[in-house]
View: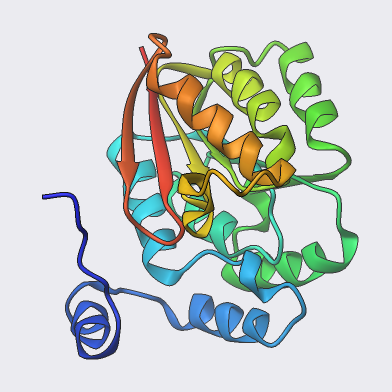
Length: 219
């Protein structure tokens, strides 16, 4: 069976009623972000819940996030880390991350999060230069699509064996399956998807949540 059920209407309400656990603070952040320009960049509540569960499942203590926006995914990750855990966040927007910082502080998680406002490649290279290769447990990539491959390669160096890399928007609204779509972002995602299919450095899965999220477990 190749078709997936479309989750909307009454089925979406049922899914929310039976599976969604969203703390009030995260809900407020999601609702605030929904009113902002660029709100479509925010992950869904279900995806955030899944990311947090995966972080707990692998016993993550140290993680990196490429693309923070207003901080929903970073809250989900930081909440899943132990008290002495650390999340490095990479973003280029002071404006959006001001919202994130406000919610991190309210959640009491700002002490676990280190945000760097700079091109993510530079930040990731800096982490590698600090000797963190093979020391991280989790990486979440959700930033500019043309740089996805560069982010993936750096994160693969940073995570330990058994560490997990999560990559968002890998279905790109279905555009990856449209040969007529030659947009640079679409082609970058399409190329990384093809590369990962045969990448023997990782075990691979697609999570059918949000706009599609790849899970690559480092061998």
